Amino acid sequence: MANELFRRQLASYAAVHRDWRNKATHFVGIPVIVFSLMLALSLWRFEVLGREWTGSLLVSLLAVLGWLALDLGVGIVMGLIMVVAWYAAEALAAALGSPPAVWTAFLVLFVGGWVLQFVGHFYEGKRPALIDNLFQAFIGPMFLVAETMVMMGQRSDLAEAMGEGPSMNRT
Image 1 (tube, rainbow, N blue to C red):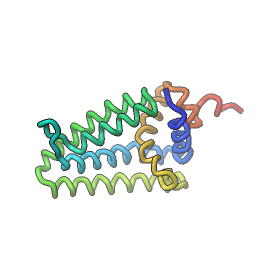
Image 2 (image 1 turned 45 degrees about the vertical axis):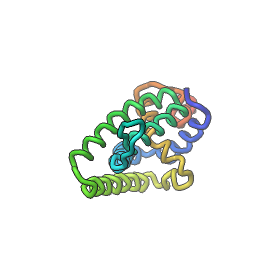
Image 3 (image 1 turned 90 degrees about the vertical axis):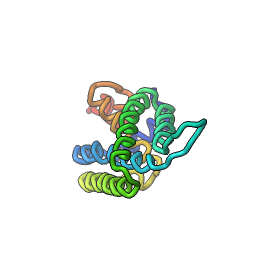
């Protein structure tokens, strides 16, 4: 399931994401930030083997491969989410119709997502994990999936890594 690197990174991330308000802002802010990046990357088009591809698809595939390497179960869920997000980003970019419109939407979403992140950390009273470790930006989306799985009663191994497991609740 989860490899040791993921367990350590998840524990580090969870340590600065305990307050419910911080978690709530992250459940909105992180997907908005990821979507904004996919939207901007949809403008980068290139041809391989006679077929047009986008940066959005390439980066999404690379991210999913990384997430799968860290934890197969979380990675599969992340892959399913990314398929929907990639399709939506490509569709929105096409609907907006021009690079300036896509860049405007990107900026609004990207800045809005980050504002939510910092509001959450104001409530938490701790600075964002990625300030000390940039890799935490890659862990953030996985944290949302892991947190959801734990809330659904799944993945007790992740609950323990996040300090939410039964061994952490003993007196």
